[in-house]
Image (cartoon, rainbow, N blue to C red; front, side):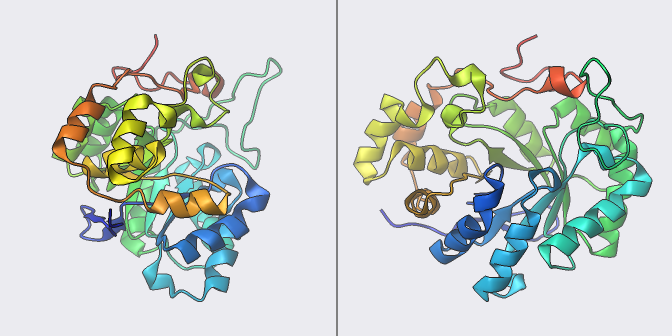
Length: 314
């Protein structure tokens, strides 16, 4: 089964490669991992200020010799820099670490502000998050300025519900180019995906392998998504793994997918998840939806996320 090089068009007209390389966690291993990913053919790298991996991403890209124009870089604004005065300086710091004068996509990581300052997770004496008083609409308006200046070729959001996104569309000038959310065959969010599509907002899938990540305590007492018998069986037909089938499913929905790994063989295998599934197999995967959300940091972040969305446990 031939590996494709699928790209999707953002509402800016720019193209985004369907398979991106995620750099969350394993900070010290990321320069080597990104170098391996670039060697394997990835042209889309996803990072964030809070990951602490921007310097590693920048170094790997520089050493690769691949022209900057051929690589799509996404980074994200962290919650402690939501105040409008902090947005551009935060992006400038990211650009400096990445060794570039622009990013292809700049996302607001969460629709919640933390207290301003250098501490990424300010907490009170009871260990609860100290929230700032900046409305995410005001943060977005400051992000619009980075888009208008060209420092961010596109701006978007992450972990936003439809209701929160609707507010941005109504109250601001620029419609988000993308929303990066948890999505996989166990959390398919078909209605939400269709709604974002109808607004011209591209969906990016983080955690496309669901509970493969051990940080998600919710998924520890069930089988791994990538070992789901249906995915594995479909994979045999194409000489692919269950993980590769999960990625191909996401791409078939018109979404970009963001697998992450520091293991060279898996890095190479994930980029081969860009292949075409037949409709009968997509129909089988549709039946796997459990509305199972593995990531919801509402309690730790001081805001109730994902209200009204699939997989939200009230």
